[in-house]
Image (tube, rainbow, N blue to C red; front, side, top):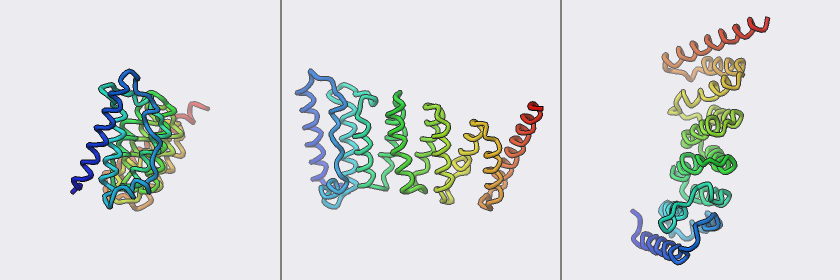
Length: 234
């Protein structure tokens, strides 16, 4: 239960924010509207024992920057170094929250600006390493963005490999562990993909016969592709 005083503080913050932007209505919102990120320790001190609630307030503050005085601020105009600093502080304040990771992976990383997108994806990667068994879905999405939006297969492979090496919980699905295999195929690294599939089959971690059968079929397909490539070279 969030205490009433905290919601009052939030209301005052939002009112002040709207009044400020209304007074400055002649100026379009810009990257400078996002202030320097606070230290997580300072936010925790201001939370009076309610860090999760303050984390939600901070995320709402970021959203007020995204939409200011009735004018949408394009995400690609934000100072992403500051933005990532805010997301880092918020996540440190409330490590169980998925909202900063959702925002980074599904909102801020999907801007048509490769440099900004990479900053958001790197935040997801660093956050994943601190809690891989809970945060792997966001890194899986980051891997897909790196592959399809950025066209950066090595980066996509790095993220997929991190999931395979670090996410050890029993509920991590096979498709997430397999991402590295398919990216290796896209890179035409067929031998490496075959080694990975063989490792999965021999690991003893596959308890579903259908999953094991699928991987064996995939391995056979790769072996046929490899044999076909060898024949063409002769």
